[in-house]
Length: 395
Image (cartoon, rainbow, N blue to C red; front, side, top):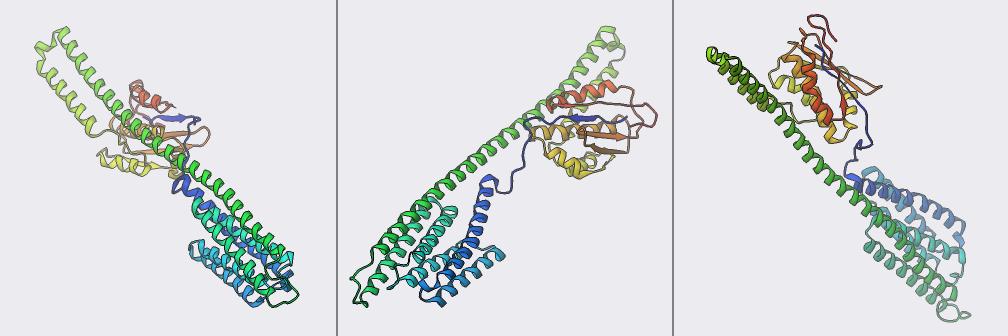
């Protein structure tokens, strides 16, 4: 007797395997990767711009040293998996160093002020990617006001040494100081709003997935309980019918001990169903162990366990449970009805089919086995087919 050929068609409800940590964890990893990429590309562009306008800056060695420190921290972050805030901190030092270096009598150099503005904008964007909205805005306000204050103070100090200059910062310095504060805060706010919404959507999806998982588990338990009750009711039904038949034909008087023994056997069968029901696990390895654990005396051999695992993992949990249950019940049928010592489980890609074969003695009552499998197959939205060549080599 060959076990059932289970053919099922994936529905629109086919589940997805979420990444470790859920959708929120995936969003956090994407934002971290984006921040690392931004912290690598933009400082390179700013270093090129700084080299092109090196005459507009003082403290050239300080700036080169800060860029080198930033590159070292970024490499260590990628290599050791440290927090992204290390290169962000060195980037902040670059902003402050640039503000000090560009200050002085030549502060009116527009290119140098634009470089400082670009540095502050980029740091604010990274803060918006990594931190919460409140923390990102606090960092943006602190950084931009500090840089603006350094520009104004250093420019004011520079005019004190030049008798031809009016005391105080130049209008261009004040203008760019205001631009740095406004642009940095606004860009940080925009990025933080987008990332906050993205995180909230991911957390909502995770919450929905957890609720759906609990519902699927509850549905699986209910289906398993209903299936067990159905099998018990079938045995009780047979007991009642056999007893009524014995009463009708009078054999209960002459063969009462036979009828009693049959009823006791049916009650033992009900207890066996309760004790040795198909396991509720959906793991293929546990299904193989089930063939031994239930003392079936049969070996379960899977031709391609990886393919079978992928096929089952693509299904929602409630369908996954029923498909594994069908395979497990097929193994039980091969052991108890066919007397086989080994079953082979194979998978066909097109269409998606799971075939359970054995080389036992077979059975003449194929319809009975098919009827016992159909309720579970109906719950799994699967198609089954049972074939048997009695006392011949079978598939």
